Length: 330
Image 1: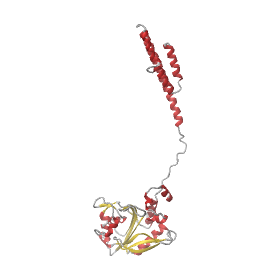
Image 2: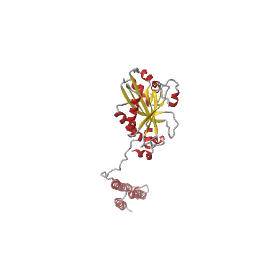
Image 3: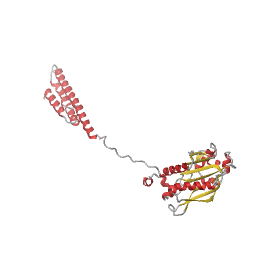
Image 4: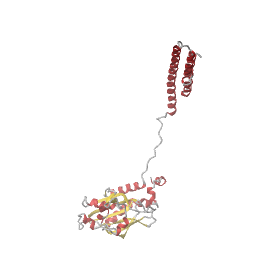
């Protein structure tokens, strides 16, 4: 086969290739190491020395022309295949997107938001205290003598000898009394920590409400009235409040308070938290005249409120991120 005929055959087949795959096969056929164009050089040995330069030049020109045609066709086919792929993968940007799943407020978050609205509407000022608390604010400022037995129930997580994860939100009292003079009304809602074994009714991490007021002439009647308004706002207008004597180092006298509602508890009394008049030792520690001022304080666990309201019987449900549980309270 002459150089001219082979060249024309190669150009025709390359220009007729319909895909890059087919073109690759033609490249190997004509331009590969053992291809037909490369094979033309094998015949140079049969020529005289005078004929060889002209023959070699013809072969090189043939190779160059075939290579140029191949490269041009390759670019054309790649562009065509990219367009096909683009058309295959294109999307209609005018179509509506997939709907996003909306998040829900956690049942504890909803409860704390409601607590803030209720106490805020009663004139109490919100105060956000630190979770990493000083030992003095957590115990000493709250009338806990060193090695007092009441501290045994509040074993917690110490960071240093003087700093710990707070066991009670009541720790904000010393911070407020140190900067604000009576009359005052303050409350906080936040996380607290104790070294507890986790079970259905206990956890190492839980949430508390602490609320207190100091003014002239404050008595247990004011405390019970305030708790009544708070409990009815949280649980319904039929709720009643009951006091029973109890001991807390930071109040004197101290009570635990229970609530009763025919709609929620079938008329049974259910303990909600602890309360009392702020101990005079705490007020005097901060230079507050106990002959002129008295105050009350009360606290309760936030988790207790939705557990009572919705009949939830396992504290662990609040922290396990199980949507089957959480979606019930959106």
